[in-house]
Amino acid sequence: MSSNLTAVLSKGLSGRNKPERRKLTYPVVLLLLAGALLLLAVLRVITGAEDLTSSGQFSGALGAAVPIGLAGLGGLWAERAGVVNIGLEGMMMLGTFCAGWMGWQHGPWIAALAGIVGGAVGGLIHALATVTFGVDHIISGVAMNILALGVTQYLAKLWFGADGSAAQRAGGNDKQSPPMSDMPNFSIPGLSDWLASVEKHHWFLVSDLAGILDGLVTDVSWLTIAAAALFVGTFFVLWRSSFGLRLRSCGESPVAAESLGVNVYTYKYAAVIVSGGLAGLGGAFLAIGTHMYSDGQTGGRGYIGLATMIFGNWRPGGVAMGAGLFGFMDSLQLRGGGETVHALLLLLAVLLAALALWKLRAKQRRIALISGVFALLLILWYALTARVPLEFVDATPYVVTLLVLSVSAQRLRMPKANGKPYRKGQGK
Image (cartoon, rainbow, N blue to C red):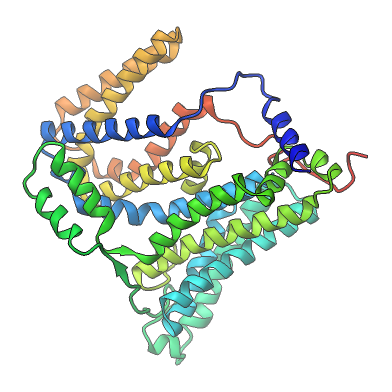
């Protein structure tokens, strides 16, 4: 049966008009990471923006990347089974609320579990609407976001802000839950101190690498480690197990999978519930990090998580890289402000110039011309200003989202049956 399901996946993958592109191998990925480190080090020296490779910057980037990455990973589970999950933002809201509700009473570990359950309930509702009743996936996802916003705001007023309630006496109100206790952090003894001492010397490349590593091994939340394990586990479950093979076949050709004995409904339900649970854990991470639930806490991270899934080409490694990029930009705009983001204009100009040369070599002159013009404009912007407006700083993560998606759009391939309606027995 596994060989037949593999044939189903192969048929779905071969149904494209464009030729198969070469996959990124591990040596190529390591080479790209080394090139990114070199560019950041050079940029730090040229601009004097020391925060670009500081341990604080990458510690903040890691914290910002985790909820985005978990949301993107949740989207990957659902869409690999053929269900579009626009409702990730709403499921994250449910996760933050449930985490805040249980966290102030029972601590952060129960808060994390409650966040998973809250998000999974949202996933169950989305699966019920799309899989059982055949509601359009986009409509159901948007409805989930609206429903989650209304439910969390109503219950916050009812449970946290009611006059004389225990929650209000503990510090809660209509907009937030009472504070919860801290989640323990993890550091590697000895290594953290040594990396911090190397970073202080500001040696070219060496101190930059030390700062990055120090930010990744010092005061790391245990939930961050759990999130990393979930990325690894997702890869092995979906790409190295018979369960994952059946689930992905539902996203490529559910009719063919059904003909081979796969219960498509069961796998779609399982995938969307797991999707909601992962998004809910991302929401719980936000609540635990700030020690409470607060209204509007997700801040659109569910939508950015959806963008990381698309940028990552529906693969766990790509989602992780996308979440890291957006987390880096989010941390940069929070920590560095206009001066540090201003330094990135030069880096973006260099990257666009390289893209222009690459597209010119591929004889795609129109894209090359547009990239070259934007690179020139960014160089002029950098040369004629000392910092960027704060409004642009706040919008930096979202601008990067649009740029990355526009550049990577040509190499993307979603599961073939993603978002398409399916009814049991329709192939007969």
